Length: 113
Length: 120
Image 1 (tube, each protein chain N blue to C red):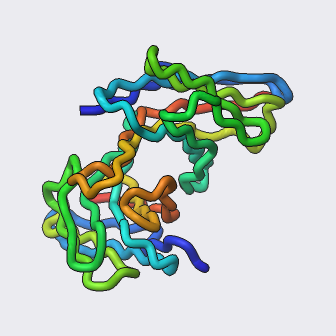
Image 2 (cartoon, one colour):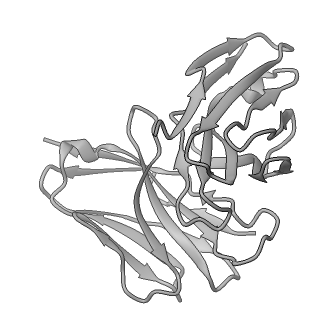
Image 3 (cartoon, each protein chain N blue to C red):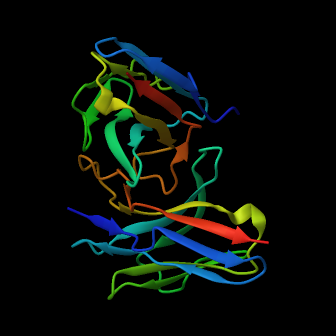
């Protein structure tokens, strides 16, 4: 198993550009989520999904879209990048929404200039 | 809303010594999980230890153990025989434990983190 994979590892965008952060897991996990990590703060939930076709907002969803067309993939879309979205983004998954442990991907460092 | 607070932005310890990282949390729930995650410079989030709130016994994993005080809402991490590889950011996190599908119940709530330095 590759676990949770994220691409790219690093990305630089200009203000107003759009892009998609990719997340995939090969563990047949139902629950997937996206977090962002900013300096001096812990991780904060952006969006999550409890299964294919089902997504919902977390704490900080503004400026981001998600979809879940397959169990394996959960991409995060930035519609019009802003400097406030400069952050490290983590994808996480667990076998069920009630699963005791969430497995994290390696993260994507995004800089918006 | 649940909150998690780590009051020590930075800690340092001599190699082979013991260090304790503090964490407090606020919740009105009675059933939940508490976690400590380690984040080394590689950025990878690594689960160190997990505690179920319904269990009175403190969790241990090799050199890592917790002091879980449910009434005080305190959840500290003790690292014994510190090693250079323990140097990292450590995050305390909380999650509700619910048998049903409640919106947002699965999210992890993180503290701000404690940077641990190991002095050789």
